[in-house]
Amino acid sequence: MKPRIFMLGWEFPPFLNGGLGVASQGLAEALSEVSDLTLVLPKSHPDFQPEGIDVLDVSHVQEPEGEIQKRIRTERHQEFLKKVNLAYIEVSVSGYEVLDTEVFPIPISEETFVVEHEVKIEEDVYVPPAKPFQFEGSDLYKGDLHNRIRAYTERAVHLALEREFDVIHAHDWMTFLAGMEIKAYTGKPLVLHVHSLEYDRAGVDSKGWVYALETHALKQADAIIPVSHYTAQVIHKHYPNIPQEKVHPVWNGTKIHLGTRSEPHFPEHLVVFLGRLTSQKGPKYFFEAACQVLAQRRDIRFVIAGKGDLASELVRATAKRRLGDRIHFTGFLESHDVSKLLSMADIMVMPSLSEPFGLVALEAASMGVPCVLSTQSGVGEVLKSSPKVDPENIDHMASLINELIDSEALRAEIVAKQEAELSHLTWESAASGVVEVYRQLMN
Picture (cartoon, rainbow, N blue to C red):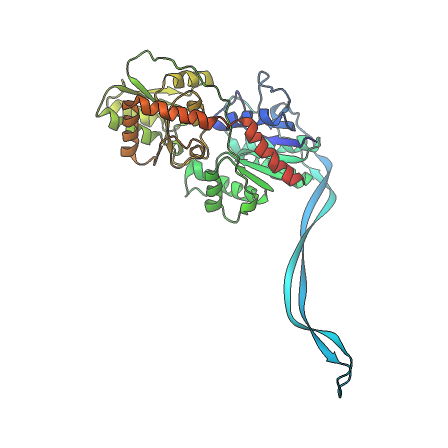
């Protein structure tokens, strides 16, 4: 029997901000072959309705009224028991002479131990109405994000209470609140899929409300699926008191398309950075390495593709150093433009300070581009042959770029090894790992 999954997503094509939407799509499409999948989104598009997935768009849901619902609540009870250790001695029947004897137990020590068991309680609860809110525009993070998450949660709860399912699956912190609410109302097990954490986005000192929400949700979850062993270690180190036995890393997959290479319309080599222009992704380190390389040679062009709060600063720095003819900015690229850029690239550099996975590296590898990866990335666990660099070591990054540009044979060797490493990294294999987690909870 296929597991019935109630999946809570945030990004999904065509409404993308980064790798979350790409991963959600790839996994959902693969899971639809092996499960009955309902996917709840804050906003969907009629042109993106994958076959086999029941897509529910909360922006199209009428304002639900308050209602009484049955809730199955699970309580854990502890029972403290004592175990008495006995010794058995032979005792004479008579106090004056040894005749027949019998074995008589006497207590010599005592141990206390705890037995835990679950009790399911059915009760009537009042589900409040959802407040009016419209999910407008294509940027799901723009504007009042608190209100968007609240509205999504309220509508997702009402949708869940209308359906039968076995497992709740929530993607990243924007959906964790909805996941916990639905678990509270239904008693169904909650799986949290961790694509990134506040630690990754904002660093070790960021302990605001998002971090607090993540910490609480990780404790409430029945199972946690980080996208890499690297992210599992981040959870262990920076999110206290999360039992490691409920953490099950599952690598992302990729749609392998060994793309056709194309020649650029310029004679120089091409080195690219693809990602959000935020501190986490390390574009400043890429920029400084590019400047160091360009101080020695002029036969390379560098492209910084993406948008983010560091864009203006990097453009100004490029102009100040008079490198506008060698460092180029594209802004955000749609997927077909990303493929076109990668088809011309000689090297792709991913210098993230903390990268839970790094799907862009898989895409580059599938296009025959050698990748230079951060030592602090999950994708390095699967692209073992790709050179690794500490993102803050600018000298080493510049040296690797020079070495790879100067050796076509080395680039070809890395490309061949990367292609071999990609062969088993499919969304079907990722879905298989996720379903195994489902089945453990259902059993």
